[in-house]
Length: 113
Image 1 (cartoon, rainbow, N blue to C red):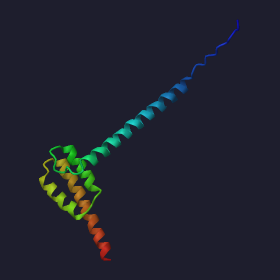
Image 2: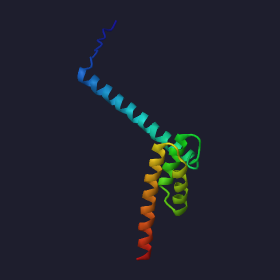
Image 3: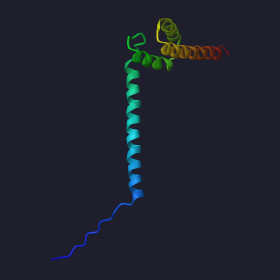
Image 4: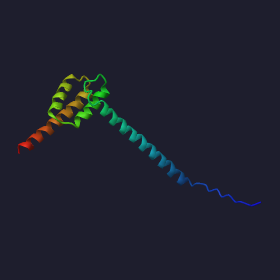
């Protein structure tokens, strides 16, 4: 018979903390990434639903319009601000509308110069 010696090393407490922290950070990153992907998906799917009966879809449509400033969208947002009943969404639309108007005015002044 052969005599085998089995050595079992115990992990130090510090190493256990490092492993737990690393796993927790990976979990938080995964959940955050999934949240970002879900938000992008919602915005893409509901970009044309500005007058939807669902507030989340209207918010997604506002997010889409914010990144597409043009004269047609300014006119659309003016109608939307007059139509929207929820104060938070109306305020968000007003801020986006003001930003679009400033951007288009600046763009027009650059073209004239």
